[in-house]
Length: 214
Image (tube, rainbow, N blue to C red; front, side, top):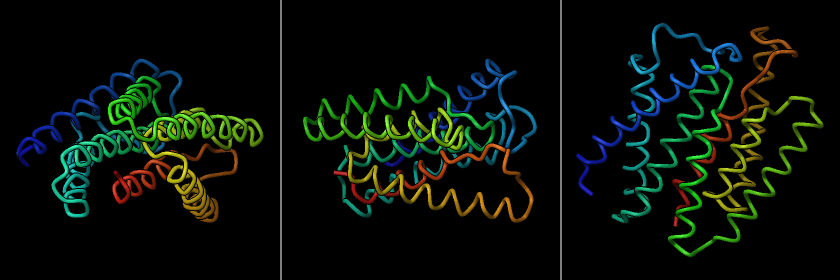
């Protein structure tokens, strides 16, 4: 697939996901809180468009550098980074990861496993165990992890498998905990405020998938 096609896809899909996120945010407007305020619609924000469109392209280029001209792997890295960056943005913007986008991400991950015929059982086990463990943690911590985090970890299990998911969860909790502590120390957030862990899981998982995709 020529580079130009990826550039076009990056721009169109990045903008498309942003527009979808904006529509979903209006659908649940009364239930959402704003973590990072923006002016106007998200699809018109240049910096959001740059992040959602350019970063997946950079990840695809990195996949080519690390793994050579293997189109399936480059495409998988592009898809994973496209969605995980979007989840990070929505969690930072509105403190939510939308179920409909997570469902599509999980469906694409399951489709990849079925088409490749490799790692199907490991992916299913990783998704189920990851979801169950984080659901239990969400109950124990009384909201320390949100429902979006629970479903995100489950969906990522289909793409990452058990080993990479475990590393992702550990590193994400550490990085998220450090950032939460810094925000508490600087008094920019209080103990009662929600803190988004989703972006740290998403970013860690994206990097690990890029480095280890097969």
